[in-house]
Image (cartoon, rainbow, N blue to C red; front, top):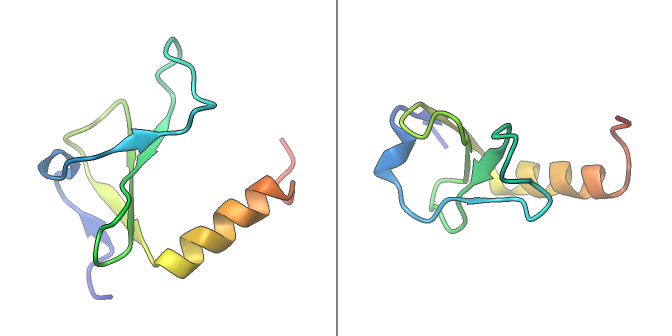
Length: 73
């Protein structure tokens, strides 16, 4: 994977945020499934800003670690 970010995340369709995110705070990240180069992640408050692009395996490991409680609050 050569690119590590997408300059204008709004150019992509299908963003989703966690079902645990509330509508009132606005402090969320959104992810895009099915991107061929990895998993794009953006700040929901800045949809036209950049998105970071993570390798799919790395993102999957991160999500598993969060679910397993490896990152205390």
